[in-house]
Length: 146
Image 1 (tube, rainbow, N blue to C red):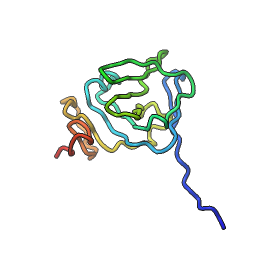
Image 2 (cartoon, rainbow, N blue to C red):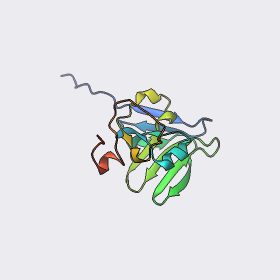
Image 3 (cartoon, one colour):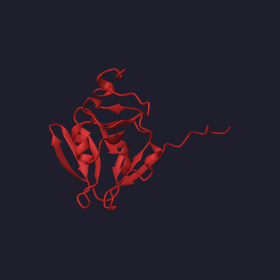
Image 4 (cartoon, rainbow, N blue to C red):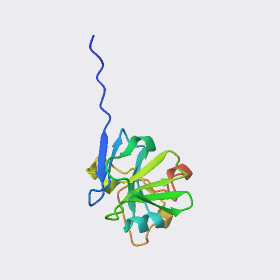
């Protein structure tokens, strides 16, 4: 009898601009979304930040570990201490998760964001017509905006 074939779990790799921090995320992501909150915008230096969420145990740092910064109570942001590239976000309100910046992936196109979160803080001049659901805070805290 032949063994049933199963689809291999994907592995996502990535790292910082200079290559000092590298990571691998094994298995399927929990979610991917664009965040418009002020602290993510400031951390990324961009009008919004795009994250992919994984269970913490799915992610390993394969070179230098990133430096961390406690950006607010219960929130830790990781970055490369050499080149400054933002790497990840972890928060007590999302226990057991790590949120990686999608554009630090070697293949950022491998992940498709499914929503916009914290649009209550979105910049007034930003206009996006991608058709994705938009949440005032997060999808865990309410229905999408009309």
